[in-house]
Image 1 (cartoon, rainbow over the protein chains, first blue to last red):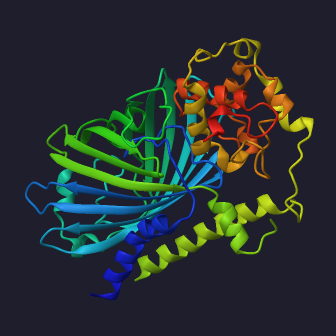
Image 2 (image 1 turned 180 degrees about the vertical axis):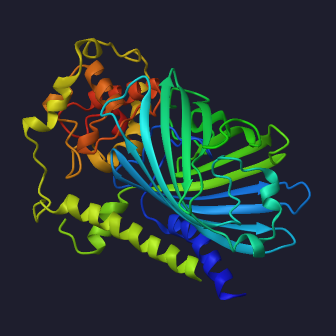
Image 3 (image 1 turned 120 degrees about the horizontal axis):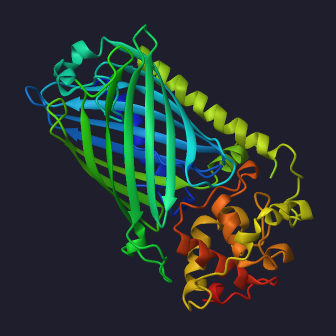
Length: 297
Length: 154
């Protein structure tokens, strides 16, 4: 196994390893979305370690399995920062590391309102073989993925991505709308996209005993996302769109499992994507690091 | 290899940011972790609840299971900062203080819903309304003396 493969595997299994040995899990109340964001940020000082996979079908080419590890840290009650490591395996081709992302979300308003805005700023440093489909943007279409990994990885992408997240919670339902604008820093036009989501726990009241299979631990919903063209050709033509039921299961042990089959809505989209993910929240990570470095208790 | 090196540099930056934030939170703290004391200003946010919110009754006031359910929710979401028995810690104030215990259920519900974002108390509206009311029932059941809560008994 090459050094690169070893490093990729290390990076991707690191989140799982960290979360297994982490001492203080918290039972999360995580949303089930894969692409859309709601307005809830990570609790201050907590670290959420996540692993996600996307299996995608490819017409005229090889199916693929893309994956990413994610470290989400609550810096303050109004700022959450996340670091991603991405990779992918294209069947009958190769497995490669495709890049990293650094994402920040800022809560704008102090109090809860009917619509709650959150600003999202992300820097992406990836190559053209990236297939995690974490968002729909511009004129991204299925045929873009026909290029072999060896050729696609030669393209380097430095991208800034901005999102306006507008999210509401009403009678247990969460409704969210994300508008996206992304700019490849190598002189490409601004590209646009969207994501919509709605979700609700299967039960709103908590049970009076600890339980794994209680209805309140499951959150179901649906999300829809896609591209909206770019600055020169804004609109729905030559764009891909997906509709995806989502299900999240928050276990009392602090783990969250998510699953989502996504269906392409037009001929430019992959016909089928299967996504799944596992995450664990570690409370007091900031304090733990601080103590390790000798901070006063 | 360049991408990997960049990724590792990113990882390091992420860790440094985490550490700086964690350290800055500790900078002015006392050496000994003595029983935390809170002045009235700590609880000032309770006074900011609008009258309409303050007067809201708890719809689960007569639910016999609300306190036990609230205790579990408290342990899952609140105990890390407020302490296992809500006695408070250096991260967050005691919920057994008279300011909290004398607040109306509606005030506590309002505070849970809105958080005190600038003072690190997160917004808890991600918990459905009934669960926030269950938490309020539990907090109000604590009283001012420790270990009096029916929910904390084995």
